[in-house]
Image (cartoon, rainbow, N blue to C red; front, side, top):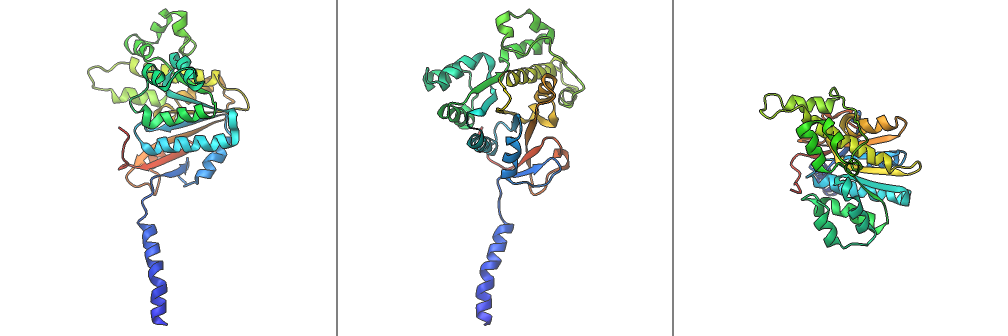
Length: 289
C-alpha cells in the first residue's frame, strides 16, 4: 500500500513542480492588471472598429501574436478585415497594391518599397497573409522625408509642399497639443541634450496624425481595421489614437500595448491602464535585430 502511494505521488510531485518552473513566453492583461485569455482579446477585438496592436519593433512574440490575431480576426470577418501599418509610407501604397494584386514581383516590391531592415522576419508574414487572402493593406505612415522637414523647420514648413506631396500626409493644418503625455515625455527626455528641439515631438505628431488620417480614410462601417505600430504610437490612448478620435469620437477603438518585464506573473503598476490589453513579455526574450 505504501509503495503504491509513493508510486502515485511521485508523478503528481513532478507535475506540480514542472508547472511552478514553467517558462511562459507572454501574458495578456487587461487595463486593471488582471490576466485574460487570448480568446477574450479576440472577442473584444471583433467588436471594435479599429484595433491598434502596439508592438516592440524587435520582439518576436509581438510579431508572432500580430499574425495569430490577424488570422483569428480574419476567420470571423473575412474580407471585411483591413490591415495597415506604420512600417509602410503612404507614397508606397501603389507599390504595395501592385504587389498584393500580383502585378509586380516580390523582388521588385522589396527593392523599391523602402521596407524596414526586419521586414522579412517581422512584417512579410502579414503582407503575405494579406496577399493570399486578398485583403487591403494600408501604408499609413508619412514619408520620412516630410517628417524630416517638420523636425528641421516645424509643422508650418509643410505648407510649402506641393499638392501631390500633401496627399501623402494628414490634412493641414495639423493640430498639435504639446501637453499630451507622449509628446511631453519626449521633451522631458531631451532636457540637457545639445540638439534638443521642440520640433522633435512635432515630427512624431505628424506621423501620428498621418497614420490616423489614412486609417480613417480607408475605414468603412462594418469593417474591422487592424493597425500595427510601435506601442508608443497608441499607448495611453494618445498619439495616433488621439488624432483618430479628433476625426471621429464615436469610433470603437481597442488598443493593445506591449511591454517587457523581468517577472511577467504580475503586471507592473506603471503599465496598468496604458491600453485595453497589455501584452507582457520576459525582458530576456530574444530579439529579431
